[in-house]
Amino acid sequence: MTNAIIRTIAPQDYEQWLTLYTGYIKSCGRKTIDYNSITTLWNWIRQEKIFCSVAIVDDEFVGLTHTQELYSPLNGRLTGYLEDFFVTEAYRGTGIAPQLIDNLKQLGKEKGWLFIRWKTKETNLRAQAFHNKIAKKTPWITYQINLE
Image (cartoon, rainbow, N blue to C red; front, side, top):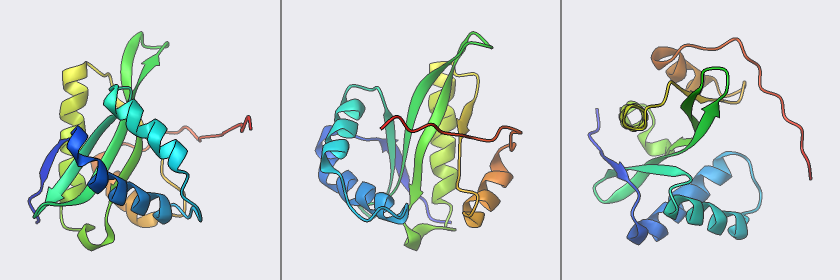
């Protein structure tokens, strides 16, 4: 198991975060990088509209989470939604992902969230194998209406 430093992103981390995040974007199959969207995301992180944690090994950023707070009208409580969850290929299977999740669970407890949810591509079997070990799969199927 690789021990990482897991911490909240800091303003001086921008360049390393950018390198890691663009790696994530490419891993999602995106052919182009939209730097305007990245600037918007960075501003949301700085404003704490999005919570970002990073995993660092030997001063190298090797993983990240981007999470936002959501309202659950049915429960009358706040929840967390894990939007992005990424570990570089070289560090997958080394224990970085569970450390990031533990950090996220701690954040959720501090914020008083009822639960944390996320989605994964149905073709990402490796991620699903990990998720099945740490979380309960819900019966909900995700749909999307694009407005642009």
